[in-house]
Length: 439
Image 1 (tube, rainbow, N blue to C red):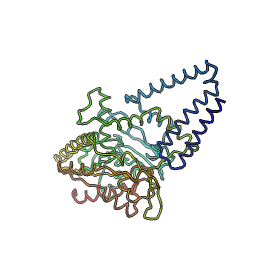
Image 2: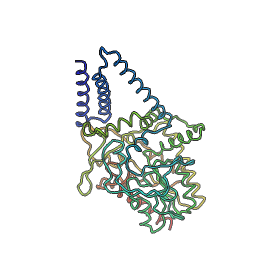
Image 3: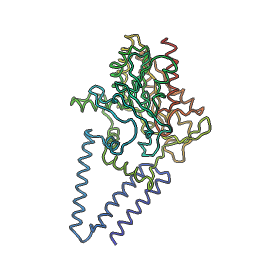
Image 4: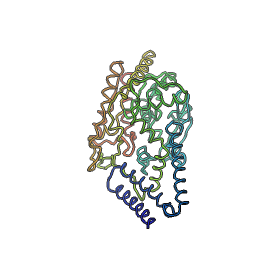
């Protein structure tokens, strides 16, 4: 009878998780129910093997195995906590996650793309990977790097325009001929170099500017600042270099918030990545639940399910963000001064998060948490930074929102990045500025 009770409890937990996943409940609720179902299944398995009853030896074996598993998990989580291992990367390697995801160590930049990469396929979108959904880009993607690991199909010895930034410049989900740099080159009929790398913040981008852009003697440097995670990428870079060199971390006015550190730890965690993989494998039973989306009707009348990240759209500017913003301000000022000394036009392009562009152009489902989201006022802060430093800032927020109201689809529906139309939209602004001031 005891065994039957445990089996019924596990079955009920699985049934509850399956129902919740199909009725619009929050992903966190479904994940917690799923985890509970796993634990009950584990207990039920031992019950079937004779534990929890009169046979003390089997009960002792169950307790001993459970303790061993707990200690093993603690050991693995310690590695993640001390940043010795990131189980996201381990999971991607084991499951052969498709996409140009390879990086190599760099003593100055912490990491970089390997040289002469040639990749072609249908990668998962970043939101599909994050939300554990089987969604891939809607066209085959080609991804090539040059001898220095940047997104150029051929090595560049001189460039009139250098574009510096993160994955928006590099062109995540875009083929080689769809990136901003490729589009600007077609529009201006001049040489353009792509110096963007996914995951870079302003500190790494300054190194890229000095080490790789300046020797190419450009007339224009376009520096793309992404409001979603550039401040955090600088923090991640400092953490990585501190771990690499064993030095003391830079003194900042405010420590990294516990919520940020906890989120980063969970992302690296063995337990969390194992749960995600199990969720992926059992998606037919308990579908991965995502409720942070809205429906967008484009200019042709086609509806698209637009997914959004909560973290990007719900942040506030605290003492930590202001301290990180000061690092960005110092970095941009130094970059602008370096360019002025060389007679190079330096322009910062502000890249808005997807939710900021589309929040007033989509229809959210009932009880959607997105309706309560209010993006932070970081753009105003960055604008003030640029004004004080005499830096020209070109915001893409207003123009992209206006285009979205007209039905323009500028971001991949299931990705946080621009699609080819979004990259072309940004390229048009770069090309127009170059033709107006640098020719």
